[in-house]
Image: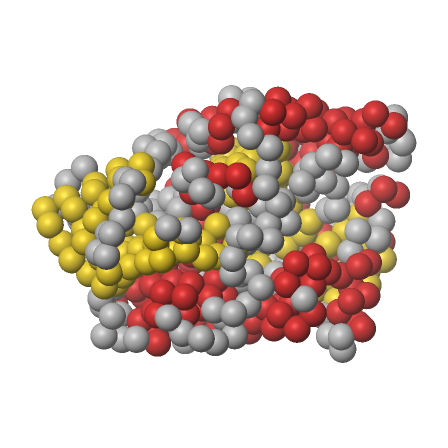
Length: 467
């Protein structure tokens, strides 16, 4: 019986937390685990995936005793530091079909559309104040190389009778975003933005109200498998009938899962509020916006007029060992600020008040995977959200809940369950050094293509090696 050793967490200092977390002064509200405790289901990780799984289990089996162990505080990880963009899986329906087949792909996409309506219901009922604004999600191109990036997903949607997207031209994009840099694209109208930290904190409150036990500041040091696994923290031991690992990028610590998972960083900056400028250029609503380059830009404006501007940097670490660089970069967000000023030159004199980074758990197929550890049928995992989780984790919670409760249903049978058909990634040191070469090539390719210049053949080849 091998003990599963977890990597020590690297909690962000208050000054390195996201704008979202700092703006509501989010922090722990529950006590760390102390002494011995017992439950039916232990969930490691108090972000979206862990909290939605806990809530789904309680919905289906109210008598089940569920305990969540969170290393820092709920929402302190990816759930509270992302770009706050809400859109369905219809944007990935072509990738989903390739992986899980047409029927499951359509079911999962529709489930994320339903999840957006569920989020809207939580907000309108007053159950969770998350600042949800369903003003649309724009997927755009700002260079010829980016044009038509959405074509496969859009065309498949139409073929399946799902008119989820509407085309946009330059005038539409300018009117909706206040920027003329992007000139063609599509929009998913029933999508938009949230304040992601508010959502995480709201889910925590909902979980506590429904009888779920949460221990924050309780990082799990090791797990001893067995009929009733034992999870050890600095202050206590929790015994459980079943365990769910929902720790995002930190699952790279588990040897069985690491070959299928790689960790990259994304960086986000937040400006000082500039409502007058944004009103003047016509950027007034809560739409979320992405471009179509490989290291994608994603941005929104808050109701107060702060611009949130993120970019996938592709930053990596040897053996995917997450350290303080994944909380905040050392350049003050310089690359993001450069791109912000390219897209919105009107904001050049507006100071950037906050910059932060975060690790993203990625799989080669850019879709999550669920299952249980090979030799431990009572230890489950959920990983590989690839930076897209606000409308996806409510669905993930249904999948994991069905697995944990032993249900034979569409969720437990769906094609995202099981790691066997996923692509294994190279071992170290090839993984790290190869990724560095590919990352540099992608950045060269992006920088040239944004100027409508064609990269050389070597750059194109190396960039094409990215998962």
